[in-house]
Image (cartoon, rainbow, N blue to C red; front, side, top):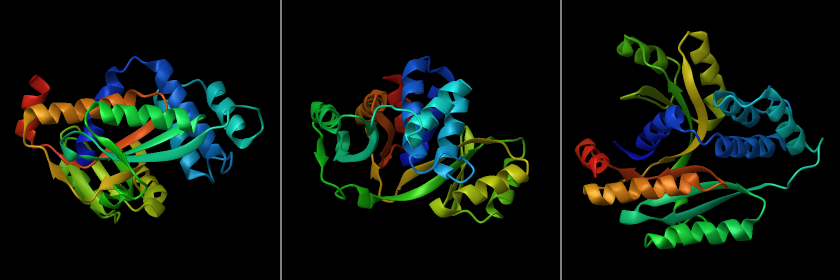
Length: 249
C-alpha cells in the first residue's frame, strides 16, 4: 500500500479508537481559527467549511466551534496562530511534508527539528521536498455492497482519480474542483466520510524491509502526535506483505 493512501487508512482507523479528545479538539480549534481569517461564513469559505466538518466529526460542541470562528475572524481576542510547513527526510530516506499551526514558530521549529534528528533524518529548506508532491483534494467515500457501480458513478463526475482501498473509496480531485465534486457525490446519494486538502505524492520510495517500514510508520505517528502538527504527508510505498510483517513486529 502506498503513500498517502496508506497514511489515510491508518488515520481513519485511528479516528475510530483515538481517545485523546483534548488534543483533537485543540488541533481542530486551531484549524478553524486559521481558516476563519479569510472569512467567517462557511458557505463562502470552503477551507472553514472543511474545518467545521472535521470538528463535527469529533463531536466538538457548537459553542466551541463558534468561539474558534470568532477568534479567527477577530470578533473575539485570542492567541495569534500562524501556519507554516516543514519539509524533511525521515527514516529510509522518505520525504515528509509537515503542516503546522503554532503561536511560537521558533519553539515549534526546534521541536520538529529534534523529532527528525532523533531518527537520523533532517529538515530541509522550502521546496527541497515539496516538489515530490502536488496539492490535491481528497474525498473519502464509504463503500457499499456494489463497489464497481459506485466507482463508475464517481468516475462519471470527472475527478482526477478514483481508487478502491480496503476500507473505503478515495476520490482525488483538483483543489479548485473539490467543493463541486463533493457536492455532486452528496447529490448522487453516496456517503462521504471525509473531505480534505492534501499533498499527494508524485514520487514514491519503496520500503521493502519490515523493520524499516515500522520505523517509518512510527515516525509518522510521532509527528502527528505533536500538538502543533495539523497534517503529515509522506511519499513511502510499503508493499502489503511488508506492511503485514511490520504490524506484527
